Length: 351
Ligand SMILES: Nc1nc2c(ncn2[C@@H]2O[C@H](COP(=O)(O)OP(=O)(O)OP(=O)(O)O)[C@@H](O)[C@H]2O)c(=O)[nH]1
Image 1: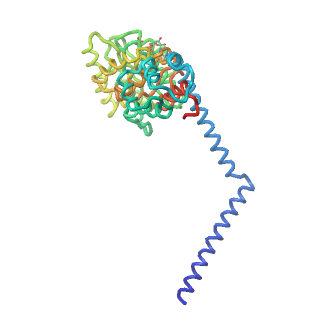
Image 2 (image 1 turned 90 degrees about the vertical axis):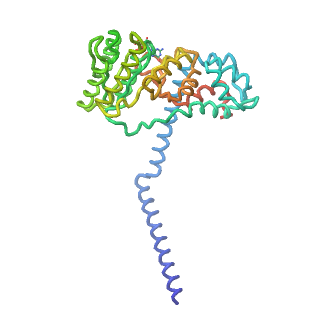
C-alpha cells in the first residue's frame, strides 16, 4: 500500500517534469516564432568564428610577409612542398635560417630519417615552451614598461608602435624619454609622440634619466593614464655606467609605484640573428628581462634566430617588428610562426 502511494507520487513527479519540459519547449518554440534566437545565436557564433579565422589568417599573412627573406633561403633547400622531408634537409634549412646548431640538435634528437609536418611542428613549437607564460589580464594601472636595448636596435620605433597599439585598443598612454644620453633620442621620441598625439615627459640631454622615469610614472598616476612606456639609454661612456643607470631607473620606478616597472622589455635587432643573444644576456644579467621584442624581421633571412633567442634566453617573445611604420608590430605566437614556416615546405594534407 505504502509502496503504491510512493509509486503514484513518483509517477506524478515524472508527469510534472514532462509537463514542465513541454512548456519549456513550447516557450522556446513560441520565441522562435518571433525571432528564432537559436538561429541568431548560431549566426553570431559562426560570424565570430569567421572573424577569428580571418584574424588568424591575417596574422599568418603578416608572418609570411615578414619572413619572406627567411623563406626564400629555406626554399633553396626544399624548393618543392613535400609530405615528408629528409632529416638532412630539415637540418640544413634550419641552419640556413640561422637557428643555432645546438638548438637544431635539441629539436631533432630522435626524429626519423623522413620527417612529417606533425613531427617537426611538435618539436619546433616545443622550443618556445619553457618561456614563462605571462598573464596579461588584470594589469595594474598604470602599467609600466621599461624599454631596453642597444642603440639602433629599433627601441624608439618600437615604443611608438606600442603606444600606437595602446591607443588603438582605447587605452591612454604616456611616454618617458629616458635615453637622456643622446639629444637625438629625445628628439626622435618627441617626434613620434607628436605624430601619435600622446603625451611625453622629457628633460635636457645629460639630465638624470631616472628622474624622467619617476616623473612619467607620477604623471600617469595623476592623470589616470593606462600605460607608461619609458625609453632607456642603449649605450653610455662605459658598461658599468650603463649597468648602474639601468639599475637606478628600475629602483626609482618602484619608488614612484610599487611593483613598477611591470615589464622590462628587451628590443633585439632581428637582422643580427644569433649575435643578438649575447647582447640580451648581458642586459638580462644587469637587470633581469621579462620578455623580448624582435625588430626588423622583414629585413632579414635570419628569422630562424627566433627559436634560439627564445630557447637560449628562456624568455617569451612578445612581439616582432615587421617594418618601419607605426602599425608594423605583430603579436608573436609560436604556433603561427611555426605554421607559417611549415606551410612553405610541407604539403597541406599532413597537418
Ligand atoms: N625594416 C624595419 N626597420 C625598422 C624596424 N624597427 C625599426 N626600424 C628602423 O631601424 C632604425 C633604428 O630604429 P630606432 O627606433 O631609431 O632605433 P633605436 O634603438 O631607438 O636607436 P637609436 O635611435 O640609435 O637609439 C630606424 O631606421 C627604424 O626605422 C622594423 O621592424 N623593420
